[in-house]
Each structure stands twice: as C-alpha cells, then as structure tokens.
Length: 183
Image (cartoon, helix red, strand yellow):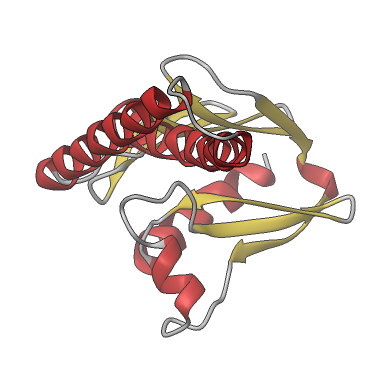
C-alpha cells in the first residue's frame, strides 16, 4: 500500500512499501499564534525593563533579588519562545522502517531523533487520563508544548508522543502504526 493519508488537520501519513512516515504539525489557529507571539514580546520587554535596574545603584541584597528574579524570568522566557517556535515551525516526525521506530520533535530542522526497535515495544496505544483533571486541561492549552496522547513501553521506559491530538485521530493513527509494526 502506497500513498498519502491525512488524519484531521495536523496529521499526515506517507506510506511506501515497508516504510511509514508520519508528521504531526504543531500549528494552532492564527489568533492563538498571534497571542502567543505578543505574550513572548511582552515578557521579553518586561525582562529587559528589569535588567536595566540591575545596573543601577542598589544595595547588594536588592541586586541579589534581581538576579534571582531574572534567573526565573530567563527560564520562562526560554519556555515561551520554545512554545512559539513549536507552534509556528514545529512538528513531530514518526518514521517506521526495517523494524525500527524513530521519533523526533523538529523545530526548524533541529531536534534529537530517538530510535526504538519495534520488537521491544509493549503496551502501544492511547494514554488514558481524566478529562476533567487540571493536568489534562493544562497540557491541552495552546501555549504548552506537551500533552502527549500516544505511548508505549520500550525496555521498561515509558515513551510518549502525539502532542494534543484528539482521541479519534489518535485511534486512526494508532491503527496505521500498528499495521507497520508487523511488516
């Protein structure tokens, strides 16, 4: 079976002989992307505003506070920029061929590819969660990179992918991937 299949708006599957390539886009609605961009911009400007105070004449205990504050600010600046880049340019890449599964979170051609042997994969399927839990709602929000919905156990290690895809889309994708495990 050869060809290209589209599952929902964000998932593309390309099948060739004994190879399956799946791409799950990180794209969101344009207004959400714009909102995320303006959040990154506002957060950056706030941080730069605080940085200017670091070079003013303040007592040392207040400078220590500013340094600690800026350390936290830097962490969340990184997370916000990463989320915006993921939503603008990122996608998950899943490739199955020759008994191997490759997973990669790609942003602008960068990202680490992880390799798994399909014969060592156990419990492949949908990750169940309470739809009303705080964590579930939080990880489905558009400003977060996460919310994986598909997973498996590989040599005792839990591996997850399929960020923020709907259950019906995940079910179709799981079926397609399982077919290729047997090839």
